[in-house]
Each structure stands twice: as structure tokens, then as C-alpha cells.
Length: 112
Picture (cartoon, rainbow, N blue to C red):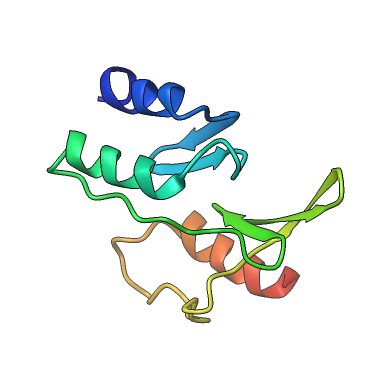
């Protein structure tokens, strides 16, 4: 799917670069050469069973996975990003969860 449809759409629309991790894509483009809304429409039409959503850069910052990418003139800076919906919860004491998962959750809060 990615190679047959999405790569063709991205190439035809002059994408400068793309990064993918599982189902998350980061696309770099020049707004003067590329209309991201056209790419969005073409992608959703090409693969009707999958509907992509767009997260756009706001105030020179875009999020991708667990990172906030800050654009400053000709440089990029990275910082950790946590979604606003993130809850501070611990995995319940349950025999179905490996002890390593419980320990990792505790260590996350300790190091935060």
C-alpha cells in the first residue's frame, strides 16, 4: 500500500522528505510547491479503508511520536512531547501484567 499508492502521491506532489514509524508519518514540504490538502485528499481517496488525519505545524512546532520538533530559522531543535490526554496512572496489580511493565511504569514517574 505504502509503496504502490502513497509514494506515488508524495513524489508527484514534490515532497522533500518523509519519515514513518508504524502508522505515523512526518512529511516535509515547501508550501510554495506543495498543497498538503491535495495530498490528504489523494491519499484518502487512494485507500478508502484508511483515513489519514493531518497534524500541522503551529508556531514553528510540530509533534511526531513523542517529540516536539521546533523550527528556528535554519535549525531544528527537539524536545519530549506528551499528549495533553496523558493520564498519570499505574498499571493495576494484575497477574496478567509482567512485573517488568509495572516496574517500568513506576520508574517513569520517579524519573519524571
